[in-house]
Length: 97
Image (spheres, helix red, strand yellow):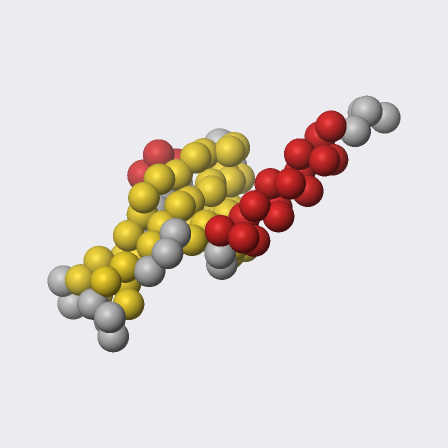
């Protein structure tokens, strides 16, 4: 695991092939608990190419100097990502209590 939040990644290599290719990330929170949203692609071994963009939000807890993943939420498609964004925009547009 990483000791610095900037070094966290979802990229994964298996047998010399990058099976999860990280395209971008945004660090939403830092500290003892870190929240990071990633944009990535999965390798399709059958087609020998990367699939469509996917998104995941990961929560990490720092213990003994290293970050450990504690939870995740995968957004499986562009359509689902657009629905999440639309819901958040609607809620944010509402007056604060």
